[in-house]
Length: 135
Image (cartoon, rainbow, N blue to C red; front, side):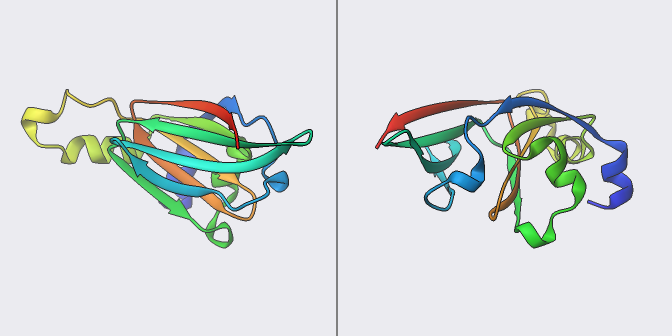
């Protein structure tokens, strides 16, 4: 995505991760499970070890950028947060490329998250959720 395209797309923060990514005690991990994409990360809550889990439901496309390749647009509202990109040219591109019989079958919401020392992750999916479990 060019800087010109980034400048035309706005995003708004829709969820704040409950701890700063600088306090993670292990690198975030990206995996696929049961048709969803999941980013997990561990941190301490008091003396208890906790695993945070960002679950992206019904993903259709995703991309990741290492920290050194991120622009201010990738970081902005997405630092330790999920932001939703409005009027996404990427979602429009994927929607246009979708086979005719499938065009209206998928929700293509564009979410992005930036985690310190890991980078930016973007996904086109139906929705997301967050959960925490003791480890």
